[in-house]
Image (tube, rainbow, N blue to C red; front, side):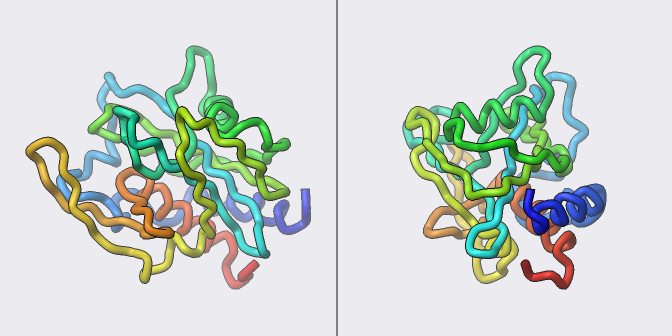
Length: 213
């Protein structure tokens, strides 16, 4: 582990328990009515997402994926690699497994850091557990075309850039509502993923402090 990665692990572990709360997130879609911060109902299924941080061109990045359009669930949307926990599996194990299933096994011994606040997605009745890992090198991704149509390498600083914020209309059957988003290379990051990105950018900025690297 490099010195900068080791320092980032230590700093992130300190700030993960503090910082922006779910209730203060600005990227919550209309009609959410606060349901994202729970408590989730007993029916909610547990899932984990993998939030990987790594340095590229001396800047902290993360990986997001675009789901194929043909998928019935969230087709065409931007998300973190992740999925439902299997019986007896921890969130950390599930996050790593889902990364391997979606993006291949090219990730060498990432360092587990901790978790962002758990997020309840009422539309799909999932409890999302965001697991943060740090890697020493830029990951070598081999996307599974059945689950991933595009890989987005995003600087964490871009997730906090006000110039990339906007709103768009979403149509769900007869329901039409506005959703705030982060625009990255023409892709709209919105919904639960945007909320997690907002929380992530807040924690990373706090961990970095005055250290731009």
